[in-house]
Length: 181
Image (cartoon, rainbow, N blue to C red; front, top):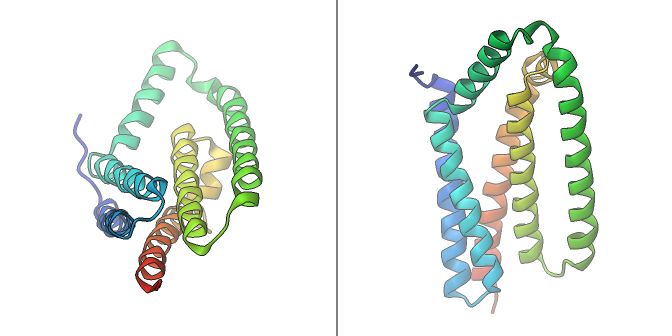
């Protein structure tokens, strides 16, 4: 089954491409200006992350995975009980994300020195938020769907907001590195 990407998916992919280019530029600037080697690696990893997001959007992989999960549940006769299956999964995801986020904020946050490190850290956290959103979309629980796709459109707010944070962090990083004496 092939799925044609929607206009929104193509637009999101275009925005992801801008983020990918900014992350790549930040990696190049970091390398050329002898910044911490970890900065170059993180920016390159973030660029790869956004390249993967582009592919996932354009190939509609999330929709295909969700359809496969639904088909599997229907075939096993568990589709009607999916909420009882999805509930613990969503709660587990929320606890894991909250725990991992807390550990990252505590361990890395206390040791951050300098605005360049803060830019890299902000980009990493925003990408983790994007990953968390993707996992939530895949679980597709009705209550979560109401939050993600309802009146507030948290799906697009978190998706575009996280991408924007990474874009601005990369551009801010480039500006900071180039401005140093």
